[in-house]
Length: 259
Image 1 (cartoon, one colour):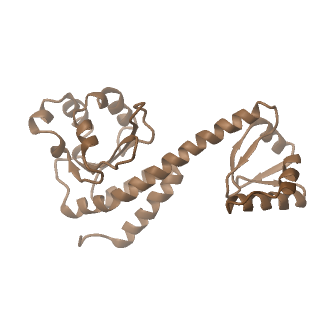
Image 2 (cartoon, one colour):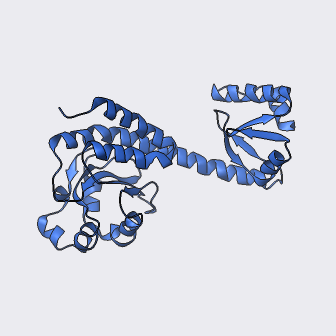
Image 3 (cartoon, rainbow, N blue to C red):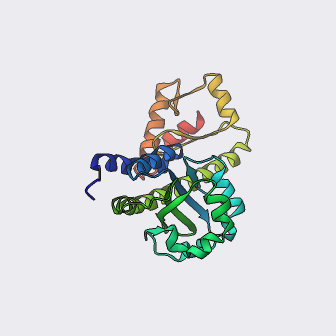
């Protein structure tokens, strides 16, 4: 791939994993890749195979409603979907590979959706994430096929998108579990703060936020601190133990809990 900008590629690669943890970064990440291959639109689809729910998906550089329009009106009847599901993970597919010219030209999906949104030369690959129908695809707003170098860049990116989506799904599930646990503990009427291993606040309820307003506790850069230095030391001991996979010292845990 003689046209590959190695520095830009490596930067985009790092950003893929950053977006796995910070979903708001996805648009910038995929747009930077689209610029590398002269694409206009990027479609990331992650649909739960059991519920049909859109877990993590978007159609970037398009009408904001276009992705929802596809899922609501076309996804269920899209004859390409089972063919994508049967394809090998990471296999580069072009739109013309997954349906015939006759099928395409007789399809409302093509005439009423793809042509309206100028989604031409769709090229990408299924990601192969268990329990989900996944697809990473790029398209142009004109009938101009992607060059071999562009397809090569997509192929190099696909395994990293697969891993990033897996991470994003795990992080999302963890957040759901954290919120559910926080709400359960909140039923006691106490202030509840749940901290991540890095010390950042993963959950806080109304009572905890009220304690912040009364300056009983302090949240700085999403991290908890107390007015008393001794309690801050106990908190640091607990977080360090949990981060290292060790059981927190009983006395320290009791001291923090009592606060």
